[in-house]
Amino acid sequence: MAIKVVISGYGRMGHMIESVLQRRGIECAACSEDITATPRELARECVCIDFTTPDAFRANYRFLAENFKATVVGTTGWNDIQEEVKSYFEKCGATMIYASNFSIGVNILFKTAEYLSRLASGVGDYQTAIEEIHHIHKLDAPSGTAISLGKIVDEAGGYNTPITSQRIGEVPGIHTLTLTGGCDKITLSHEAFSREGLAQGAVEAALMTERVSGVHEFKDLII
Image 1 (cartoon, rainbow, N blue to C red):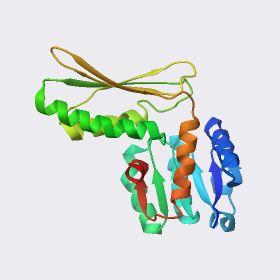
Image 2: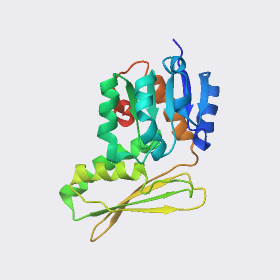
Image 3: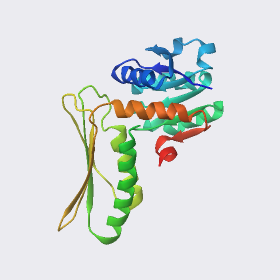
Image 4: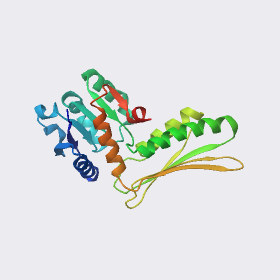
């Protein structure tokens, strides 16, 4: 059965997701700035794709878990309550797929960084660092993607990786991991050209909710 989607947060990402849905022939049942106003009978039939703000998601996640068929969460900035959110979705028996970044390229970056960090920690005296650059409209710093990348690097190589953030113009997103040793430096970087990669990944995640249940991080489902 074809899915129906409700978009929570109708800003730049919301418009981009709507465009991807239209191209894919997937019904967009509603675009909402206040997801809690969604009629419950509609929510039960729909997957919600949430790209709002950290404060909005904190206020709304219980409504999402209690009412929607499934939820895809692209909002970042709620790491401190992640276990609470996951537990609530599990308690409600609701499906949730979340990611700090839904870009396929970023998830390849995650896997590559894990391998690189493990290799480097065993053979050299490398020091790690992460720099992220985003547009001036992004509210959280460091980005959720940078936090996820740092966690991956630290767990794989036993590092304690510092993260620096910049907010410049309309930059969609650049994440750079450097490993600096006494004789050389290794650089691993991902640059997004637009937000469309995030929208495409979020729509793929919405389609995945038809065949998976429970709470999952996107990177664990695609790679």
